[in-house]
Length: 413
Image 1 (tube, one colour):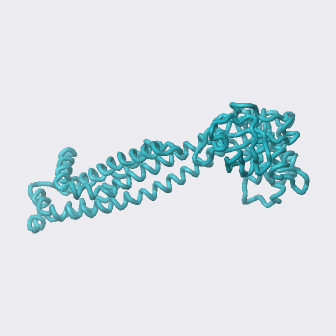
Image 2 (cartoon, rainbow, N blue to C red; image 1 turned 90 degrees about the vertical axis):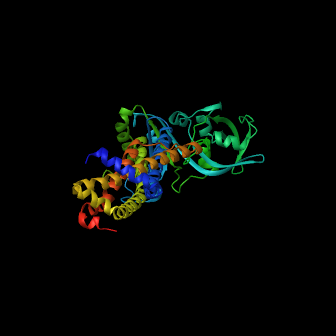
Image 3 (cartoon, rainbow, N blue to C red; image 1 turned 180 degrees about the vertical axis):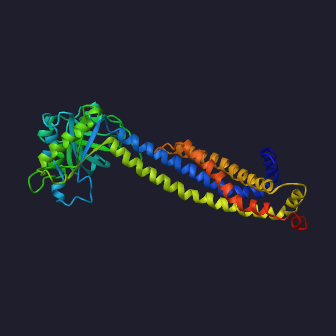
């Protein structure tokens, strides 16, 4: 019996029992729709993560405290902190020639007020090179200068989100006075809109001179007299010189921090690609995990197909006996029922695909946080897997039908 005839017989059987066919496909429909939607959301989250770190700047390296292998770090936590001396060591062009700019950051949550308006945000102390390192510039007024850092001046540059909270009437902020943790600051600039995501709003920040943050707002002086910083951002001259810059930075930091030749490093140097790769791997694992959970519905749907096919075999026992009596072979009966199971699962997969794509579109349409992207590899996988489910769970009913004795089948009531 050829495939066209098998398909025609299968469709005729399904159309004869429309409601039963739809209910049978329901598990497959829900499973495929859930898999498609969740994987699309996972792809969207990965895009957000990548764009978030690509938007930090160009050719960036991050220096953070702590050993690259946290399990091996057993040193003093205070010693692991980064300090101004580490920043100055990296800013030395003779020690690290492949770096063009270096900017430390030291920030803490704070309450910023202006009149009756209030914003709870992050206040970050840094240096003038921050704008070039982050590719993030003021659109009104100016950024602070080295003189402001040296004198610990009480000047501030506002991010767009903070500006909108403190100046809801749209008043130009430059020259206005704000209070950060009850300390007066003069606004000298307004940063351009950098953009953000559900994970981090890059515009929700107030930037002040590093020394001001360390000495006036959030005391950062340690017992040994050094001033701590949270991290150090470094811009490499070119992507090709990144590996060389990492080696130079490691040597400069080891010397600055007095780390002996055989001792483990108590700092970590990360590139943008390292961070993006690590976070992408995490989102991939989470997406796979969610997809597997949704895939359970496909297995439930497959069991439903097997149950209905067994019922169908029982109902059509006389038909099977009649076909065998007129010359149909076992393989003809086997493929008839297998084709019916595969078509049932595949139709459910296609309907589920449409619903999943619709769900992804709705999430993208009504969410400002992410764009749920339909991954075509997941589409192909869902359709093939649903067909495979139909094939797998259709084998037993089809085999049972093929093995029926024609005499017994004809006598079945």
